[in-house]
Length: 166
Image (cartoon, rainbow, N blue to C red; front, side, top):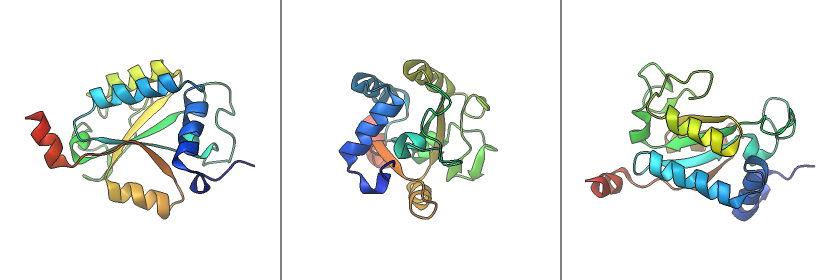
């Protein structure tokens, strides 16, 4: 039986993510995080959700990569108002709070972020999807919808990020 993410320490979840999503290569995970830091607006937080955290597909309970190596995607949640500005106006589930996913099926909805997403896909050898949200929605998905996440880059306060950028 797969251990529930809520019963795991941060170190255990991180090890699971590296093992499943990055072929056990901690260096590749670090490269992934570094490219996100470099390619996203200052202050953007990043969390991983989905089967790379739970080790099971939400839809049917199948194991991560059940359809072969590289078949499961990485669900990357971007946290912050500034990053949401990359999405087209009509590409939100909840305006100004929660976007539709940017992925291979709809790469035009956040054109400025798609090159970074595609670069990350090549790095990890699997699909990568971006979705932007605010902390309230991320929390609600975790607690109310039983969709845990793991923060890999903490969001900075918008004011601090803007000061650093100026």
